[in-house]
Image (cartoon, rainbow, N blue to C red):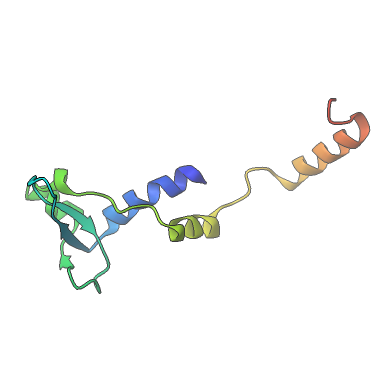
Length: 99
């Protein structure tokens, strides 16, 4: 799950239809961060368009949020089958935790 959460900002950047400009304090070129179309600072573009204009290196993925964890939790599937858990419980009852 953590790996999926870490990839969420990348997904947002790849799927973005709007970006905002974030000025850098040290005079370096600005960063372009994906944002909601409703953001007052938003301007329409895609990652592909920015890359084709030579601005790909200035694109920064957004920060990870609690909502990223919630989104991943909603689509997460169990990694262990129910039968395997039942087998483990039966083994533990029969032989103990030390086996």
